[in-house]
Length: 127
Image (cartoon, rainbow, N blue to C red):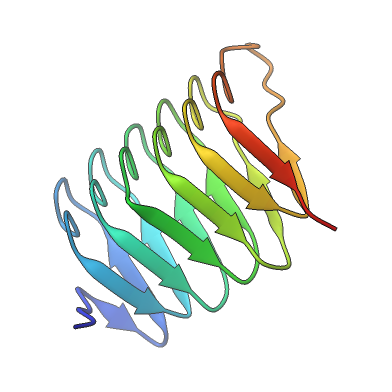
């Protein structure tokens, strides 16, 4: 079953802690904007997924998007299975994509802090 938390014009916003925890969510865009907002969830987006807070998508089962997936903060996508079909995966935060499996055309693990962004991750750049 697909569960929408707050879908507004094709955007699901998970804006407080545990808002979307352990859910299966499918929408055009998914924004996990809080600590542990999407922990343990399966997220599928026809456009983009943003994990824009610390631990936002920590231990998510899977993040699958047609376009970009943004793992922006500390451990935001750690231990997740991440796939972007036609976009990029960005992991600038500290340990953002650590121990993750990532399939994407472009995977960006650069960080100004050089802080284990993709440490122990399985990276598959697929053209």
